[in-house]
Image 1 (spheres, rainbow, N blue to C red):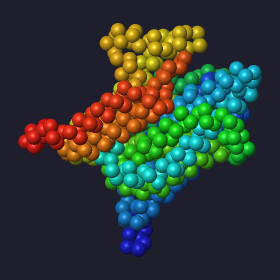
Image 2: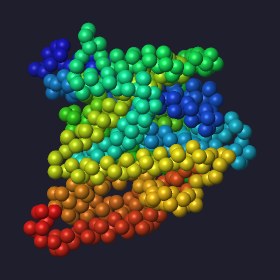
Image 3: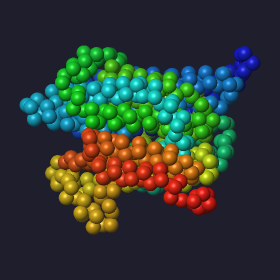
Image 4: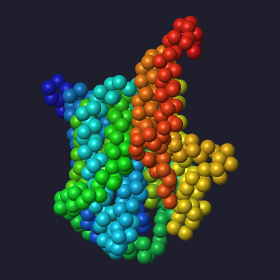
Length: 539
């Protein structure tokens, strides 16, 4: 604490813990940028000019805008309360929307353009414009949802808001990076040991060197000495050739052409669910931050979240930004305000200079695996620690859909490894279901749980928490909400495509699941008449 104003000490913009937080968040963001580059080149056929001249500069604007706002927001809260432990909300490119927009919006647009006679360059341009529409539409939904979100947050049990995040954390973050940790054990296990000692053991290195810096430096050194870093001269030459300053330029003409081109409505079945999921996910992240001690205003947080995505579309990025999972983890690292500023500046610089690939070669992903794994563990722990002990079963129930969705993802990846869904192999189709069922895995259950799993997690945890409190009619209301969401295809409804199963939005598309939730809700309404008070107290 550096100065006094109005009776409160003013928090510093930077503290030592911000270095640790920066490494974790920057590595996470860097991974997203690498995935974007790989998918745009390999799947959509974008050339370097479109990626380096339009998409990445647009991403730089959106990431910088949000990071600076959330840093300012945290600084303002710290100054107002006199606290020096306020941590800014983490923020970056939305991973779920990234894959959804590439495979469910941009790729179909590219294939349709090619079928209509467009060459590769023209088809790539059509795909880019479709991505701009999707990002723009998602931004509008996020902004509109910010006005309803505060009410939703007040009505939802904390277990419901936190357990969905914990499910993602334990599966898509912790388990995914756990595999990678043991896939490169010299780097992974060594850096994991450093992270556990520093963050769980609470010790500091002599000289005040941040533990995250030590972990990343040690990981990088080990990666270089064990051969994980590529020594291919061609790869380094390509990475160096991409370096060069490119400033962001608005693409309003392209965005307007895309919105008014007549094809925007075709993508609503993807844009609307993704926009709603982004709003719900952001709500859960805000609740996670409050459970960790930092209470940020809901509406302004979500509006800026949407404005970041809007800025992305206006400046040429196809990918919305969002509040990131992991606030309690960054807080546990000692990060406060400055890590958000550092992340925004770092991501902006590498996007505007085209140095993403060069940095990724020099500092491989394995060097920071342990930090991201630790974040996943902390989020799961918070879901149990920040809710009433009696709601632990509700948290456990809310974990299941995320874990199940990850399992379905891994199942699909295994099928793809065997050639299913690839250009030269058999396609994804309903014929796979009996084959998977024969392995004692319910294919229908797996594919249905995957769709809208964040809603499913939230609702199952809320129903369980309300039943624990014996508020059976409120629990019934949550079941009726689930029935409505399922009727419209926002949960459980899936359709087959040649390379995947995707969400199937419509009317009555998941009738069986919708009816099941309705029956469960009806039963809960009748529970007070079907049971006696003494039995209810002991259930």
